[in-house]
Figure (cartoon, rainbow, N blue to C red):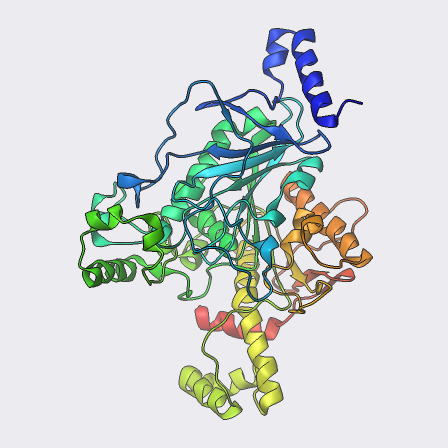
Length: 513
């Protein structure tokens, strides 16, 4: 019996001989597919239906003098480049499971390298002219970790549902987000610190130039991400350099609408921290460029996107002024999303902090966030943690609805994955359901989980295809209306419900106006 993989190869080869030259060149072949930098080869999944290309370079290796510079073009190559193995994840500390994030949520232990600007593509298209919708996934990890080879990001099942999936890599940590006055001075844009965002833009430019060869439609591209990936989607929506490179946006648990996010800083402050770093180390920027990448990981510092007004303007201001990419939006958060930080230990301390921070509005704040006793305080701190993400996605949907022409759709994920340990509907719990990759997650899933996976992945695929998550056989997802905010609850039951924490959201919004 011929194995499916070899049968597919035989079928592809026989097709080449049985059709005209023009038609043969139009086939999506795993043996030889041409992109703008050369020929590549790939492989198929176990069914033979999905073609997989891993480790496609979309920019030159950011090494040596290219460290802390905008991504540069790929050098063309001779022959056929095999793109069948996982590329290196960006330079970061070795992955170690923690909290709810088991190995399935993390990059493999190797390879990890500064030479990381590669992307992966999954497609079930047979011909290059099929114009299938495209989803470009941007990973989370606090801008200090993550990569496109996380097992739960596998694009096989979504490709079978009719879209082309692209998972990109971008530089993280110091290598992705170091700002410094000397880096600003040598930049054509007179800015520094957003190299990871520029990597994402370079990958989207690659998609625009090349995705048609994989049967994808460069005029129907959705950018999607979770956590830092959702922050990134938010940045791309307002970045003038990303204009026209995508047509829809999916943002899961993340955004940058509050005044002063902990992950984001202004250019001047980021430059000052970079200068302080080199001064403390007693070395020049040139010397810092020569330090081995793994040694850089030992240097302490806070690195993330930089609001420089060029690559990344103020997100809230861009929306207020209508200077953003007006595209359909699917966004939401999880019932047990949390952000960490210093928290008061007693109700008295919490109330004292409220009076200090909110002055005459402290009474109003304490009505919405009560702390009359330790039980109330514990619940309020949980609410505040969840709203660290939820407020961003609510505000994004509200401003898209009020400032833009395209619609927004909001979800609230409440399903607690079965098994132990139980961290509730924790930060990151939802994306495996949307990717249809529960098969790669070692939990004792129940029928309710597989039903939710089917529904959620259908919503996501429908949105990627049309900008509307709704379709046959799944509950109706209402368009978000800021005056009567309804969301779709994604849990043991999928249903429409009122926006949770709306009163608290409105109070937080009033502080940011």
